[in-house]
Image (spheres, rainbow, N blue to C red):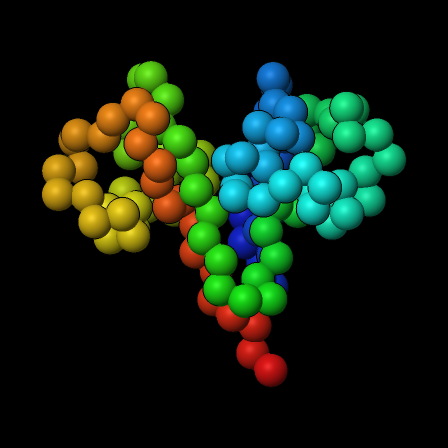
Length: 114
């Protein structure tokens, strides 16, 4: 589950997650996640832990790679957005047709006001 507050995107660690997988999902690096979250041991994260996965000092997009069994409805729910927004961000002509391995924009942040 992701949430966006004050130009920061948070993600709740799920069973089976690793920092490298989370970094890949949100288009960042393990090093950046460690820094943002003050993680002492990058090999140890806990289910339910809230992580900062994006900071919007400038416009940023978070991406997700479609997995077998995914639907836009499930992806939208997972990332706290709507099917309509996913369709718009990704120029998807048929919302019922997404492909395994397809990269989707699942979050966009606006630049911080000065």
